[in-house]
Length: 119
Image (cartoon, rainbow, N blue to C red; front, side):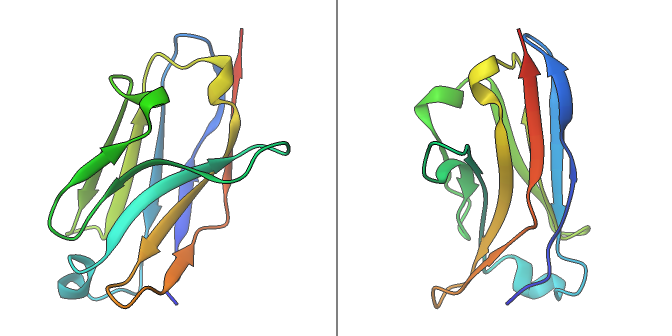
C-alpha cells in the first residue's frame, strides 16, 4: 500500500471554497501515473461515496452532486492530487478521504480530513 498524506479541509461558510491535497511522498514519480487517484467522502449515516477521480489515462469522473463546483487535478512533480471545492453547500459536510488505486486493484487510503460547511 501507498503512504498518503492529506491536508486542507476545515470549516467554511456556504458558498465558500476549500482545497484538499493528498500527497504520496514515497511514491516514485513514474509510478504515480499508473494509479487512478481520487477523493471519496463519508458521513456517519452514509456509505463512503466517490466525489471525483482521475484514471491513469486521464479520464475524470465527478459525482453528480459536485459537478460544476469541484475540480480535481493531479501534479506528478509533487505526487499530489488536489480537490478544489467551490460554492460549498452544507450537504458537502463530510470526512474526505483520498484514494490511490493501483492497476492491480490495490487501494490505499488517506487518514481522512473533515470538511464542515455552515449555512
